[in-house]
Structure formats: structure tokens, C-alpha cells
Image (tube, rainbow, N blue to C red):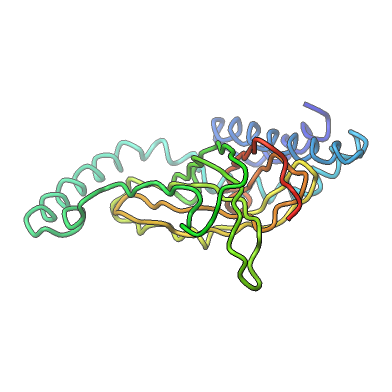
Length: 251
């Protein structure tokens, strides 16, 4: 690990109390910094300058550390057994009640929604196939990337001609939680050319324990072939990786 990255991670971890959370934070932050710096270097920026800019783009390390510490309080392991017992009791009671009255889980034909296929709309066409990887938890919900593809959309006014789409699934096992509204999660991306921007997301289908949807990047940069997408807010984020089989062509 280069010195700016190590110093930044040390500052973040200095305010995190849970050892496991420190290790996970260091791994995730390092991967994000390395990807960002690599993209800048491909633009001809010196490695030292690229590393410094990548660190600066992350923001205040102590603020990130405090956010992570709040998400991973050291009190949690000590309360695990108690909440496990209470959770099992709640599940048993709610399951029996739902079965008797045909409500809740028993009001649905399926617990898991079908996955979103790409292209997401019947009037869109596939331009370049790709792949997507990455999974993690944001706000108590597990978000997983499945497939990716570059899509040509219909020629509507004020509509992107090319769109990068990624199939997502969101799941949770807390019966008291509502489904995650995918459009409410912040999405930012950086590609292999060094360009950055924001993505948007749509819900495809829902069930009691899961949501299916897709993430889209409008008018991706010509010449880009891989993208990293950061989901969530500082301290509660995951990073997805998107790779296309070919570079994005000119629109």
C-alpha cells in the first residue's frame, strides 16, 4: 500500500473501535483508492499525484471513521444472543399469525422476485455484453450485482442513446423492514478514462424479502471499458465492478 493510502486508512481506523470493522474498512477503502488512482494514471497523471488526488476525493477520514464506528458498535456482539432469541420468537409468532390469516408472507406466491434481464425494456437492443460483480450491505440491505450490458435505447427526445445497465438484487431477512427504495440510494461512478458521474436506479419487482432492479449510467464515456460504482453514503457504502467486452463506442 502506498504511503498516502496507508496514512488515510490509519486516520479512518483510528476512530473505529471494533477490530473486525477496522480490517474490513481498510480493505474496502484501499480497493477504492487504488481503482481511482489507476484511472487517473491512465490519463497520464503521475502516480504520486494520482494517489494524492484519490485520497482528496474521499473527503475527511475522521468523519468516515466515525460513520463506520456508529454502524459497527462494539456493543453489538454482546447483544447478539439476546436479539437472536427475541428475533426467533418474533419470527415464530408472525409466521403462525400470517399462516392462519393468509397475510404477510403467505399473501405472496413467491418470496424472491425474478431477476431483471437485460436489456430491461423490450424496445431496447444489446450493443456490448458485459459482467458485473460485487456485493455488500447498505443500511441493513444486501445489494448484489449480477449482469451488465451496454444498451441502445429508442430514439426518444431528451433520452440517452446509449445506456450502461446493471442487474441488481436487494435482500434482507428482517421481516419488519420495508423493501429498499433503490432510487433513494446515492450512486456515483468512475470509469477507465477517469470520468465520473452519478447513476440512477429503477425497481423491477418486489417480494416480502427482496427487490429486483437495475442501475443505469446514461451516455457512458466513449472509450471506457470498465467502471466502478459506489453505492451509499460515506461509512455505509459498497463498491461494484462493471466490465464490458469492448470499449464504449461513439453514440
